[in-house]
Amino acid sequence: MLRKEPEMDKKACILIVDDSQDVLQSFTMVLELNGYVVETARDGLYALDKCAEKQYDAVLMDICMPRLNGAEAFRRLKVTHPELRVILMSAYSDEEENEKLLREGLFKAIGKPMKIGYLLNVIREATASPRVIIVDDDTSIGGTLAQILRLKGYDSCVASSGRDAVKLIIARKNDIEIAIIDIKMPDMDGFATLAR
Image (cartoon, rainbow, N blue to C red; front, side, top):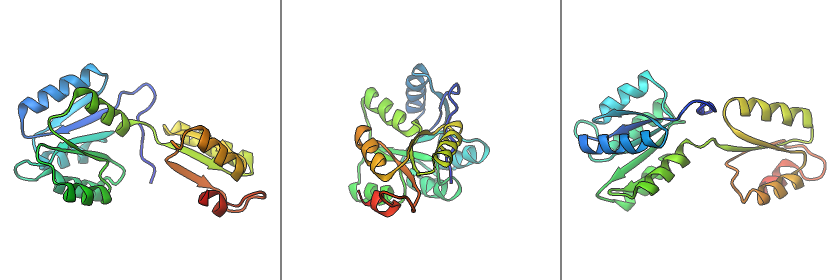
């Protein structure tokens, strides 16, 4: 499923979920000063309600909250909004639980308190357009698909062969997140390209 990315002129919208009013206010101020649109919820149940009504680019959520904790709210959001990038934060780190949540699709687990610069980097990563490479020896197909993906907010590039794709990925320092590869190509088929 394609994740809807923020349009070029639209600011990313972040939902902050925490039972502490102080945390909600301070994080809202920091993110708004850095160009984000911010909405808040005071627990996991309110977060589920808000996500049912509106599409967010990312959710920054505390783990320890009354009524519905952040981990359970994340799991429910993954069912209804599998593309949503959720960042869980906690003052009490449980590495085993964090690893489990990451395997379940959590974008990131971070500790509280955190430095503002670190928080902004995590939010920037979560709201960045996914980088896609299209590998197809038929340049009209590759070009058309890249254009469609760009209109949807994806950072896409095209390679006309497996060898060109490998060179491009190396040149971009392996920052490609998604690869759409034609299986049948003359010099290096899709399976060989993927293996490299």
